[in-house]
Length: 418
Image (cartoon, rainbow, N blue to C red):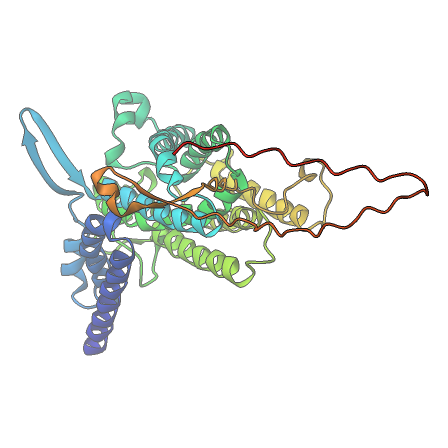
């Protein structure tokens, strides 16, 4: 059994390496550094679940992996300490990978994909700000007093604590105004970005494992993870009732990561299989529906979320289910199953600005010498139509007795001095 587990681990490790090589080959210029770091982590992550959680030297390896240092390295520059953390690296990896995906999808729809990098300058920082604010407010609604007692900790983003919905809300508003200002089709970008957001979120989720956050209730399932005492929620801080050595918790972040990958693959397949039938806004509507339902399911495994009264319903669950309803209604309106006043005039094709054709010039340019700052132009020969002599016909009088008018003599030729 142990040999089989080790073999499976080896195959998965090789598969992870091959996927990383493929990813780096496609996006070498943007993702090499991030993917190298991600390879280090994913190897550890696979080994933890395939070896530790299947019973091989469980106690020893659990102690090893439950204490993964969140800091990759640190150094001092003058009096300033520079720290590189797994959380920041994986979040940035997700953002870059999502932007690369979106760039290719935008280009496939006929628009300039490089615009997404200009938009990221505004969307990314404001999106992180919104994600942090949503997380803090949600924590306060849940009854937490950590940020009320330590307001300065609100700015410590590297310690963890970003909420996906806050990033979507703030980042989406900024993106909308950016696209409107530049005269671009909002639906085109939303359809391209919808799967990219889930891809970026999925790639960043292992950071929650390192920070030991976003876990669920205690479980006896074989893939449960160990959480040390310093990262326990208040309701699980009693080490007599929930001993560190034997208590395992639902890896909620891993559930959401897997669901996100599945939704991304489905939306990708949908966009290729029905490319000609899909109308603008279809993928975005499907993303709202699937992402909303997925997050509604995940909320059942989030004991840290703020609840409405004494019910099991969290505020995030309400928002997630609302997303799903909006997505379903949009899909029905998109294909004419329901009539909505706000859906009237919904575009049937992406509004891509056609680039003006270059004006035809009377000469052709030879750009072979453009490096020297000179352009050699060769005149284009114009076709001339040769004049054909016309036969002179004698004029016939229309009436008898009237003479035809005499033909005028040609003007004398001028002498041209040589």
